[in-house]
Picture 1 (cartoon, rainbow over the protein chains, first blue to last red):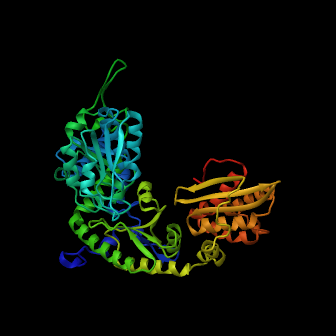
Picture 2 (cartoon, each protein chain N blue to C red):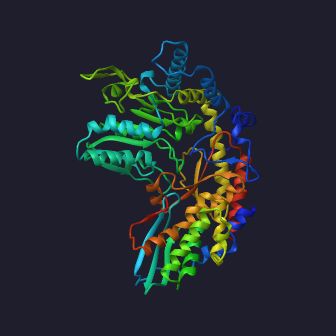
Length: 414
Length: 149
């Protein structure tokens, strides 16, 4: 792990932190230390301004009008789609669908792609570390279709074991859905290898990119996945917007997800024809301001450069990990070799909820609970962990502050 | 440590968490119920031996945060030997104390008054009330799992 951030022109942390107004406040008489980025990220002024500007100058419904405001709104919305295509290195804008978030994207694929192609006895493969959003839609699908959910095991370190993953693949596997990075453990999965393995067995693959997209450059062509899902609010954009990327040839064949306006070409009571992709999957008035906010977030990340972000965050993760290991009573859950800056940890005797409450009194925000990954918690034999999830706007000073507060936890229960 | 936190994690709570009273199953319990807080994973089972309208024995088994364990421990201490009616009444007073603003709920609550500190931490109220809701379910012979969500 590389702790020397000065190898590259470093990020200007002071300038970056000025971009995020919410960071400059006190909580319980202490400066806010926001370490809950895996739950949701804070928004730079550029994103807030873009949304405000849209509502102040350009708001109208998209696609339907010939008046000036509608034309401007449509341009901004479709420009956002172009930015998404560029960000993901997708072959075509037609493959970039705006949805509410990762959860909706996964449900859409389950309903529109997987359900029509599975028969009783067919298999869908996920891993033991998945978020509920990448478990429950598949359980619901299996119940409806008679397909069977298979779960690839993980190691005690919180890593997928490729041999064991491959053993779970067979001619019965129709679909594989896996997270690029774990929200609970931080583990970055060897997804390229996993995708190749799945393809060898004729199965298509969805990547849950909710955690990864804020921390790693994403290239859907290079990754080789068939679908990619991510949420705006996890990468510095607003809530209520996300993206499903899918291969054009698959999207063309898929049934629509929701019916309504916008996703049609022609409606009559005798017959209705659906619109082409991507509109086919965007029923109703979209989250226009959300898409515009998301585009502003993509611009912001691109300007900072995701490689620099990844480099700095790797350093911060190493710094925080080392400091936490040195604390008496605490231990880290999930020690994968490659991680996004997420640290789940436990105390030998003190419960995650108590830890969270005590350090909240010092202005520090971490998450305590099951992180929407109950099967993963069961695997580790715990009901809950505490989780620190960092971002490029966090500093080593903030980590020091958090460590001091965790020391206080030991004192309270002494 | 600020005042609110000091009140929440005062000595009695820490003590009851470290050495929970009546922390065992009752083999010949006449009723029991399970409680679960899905938000944080607090789990417990409350066992009660009811005889002629009296709570002859009361215990719990479980794992969870300090507030949930201390609350369960304090509850079993406070209600063992009380009548079932008294147990229901105390449940209502504790529930009101934790969820409403009335100051005078603290009167005549003895040790249970220490739980009042939880009010300053709304996210933790369900930790404190879990054992009590579970007891109510046991007393009402409702064997379904009680959830505080």
